[in-house]
Length: 233
Image (tube, rainbow, N blue to C red; front, top):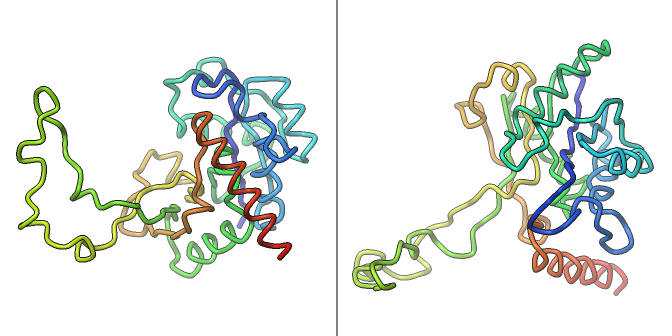
């Protein structure tokens, strides 16, 4: 089975300027994901999909394969990530390379490591899955959430008698955006990721950190510093 990791890193981020190449702990953000993909040892190709020659050169410095740049139409805020993956697969096919699985590894999850990738692939193989998606436990039950009424009224916001005690609300999970493994045929036929043979890989809170804005980046710096110090103690 031949596996490709695709790391989408377009330029022009609005939430945090050039976040994909911003230095985190002295390393470009996308570098963490490229290195984790190589360290996992499960990929025949680690590709960074970018529209920027500058980003491409940085990605190549970490060892990533960037034989082509992303088309302009797939480098906008509204571009669909799955269309980006399909385009990359087709470009590689034109170069004579095909893959059985495609794994999306977003660079905005820098604390997801090689062990996470390997464990997700173990689930993929053991369950003979069509797809494996990483998730993490949510901090607060969605049953404690609601929309606000006119003038921010909280009338009927929640019914404590129905909801019950906090500890009895059950465990809920959310997509954390770190790992998406799927069969190439599923991707190319545009079938849903969340089918009968789709399984979750549960990650802890710190490895699930996702960077979207400056505050997230600050939290990543703090988490990385904590992780380094904890290994030295």
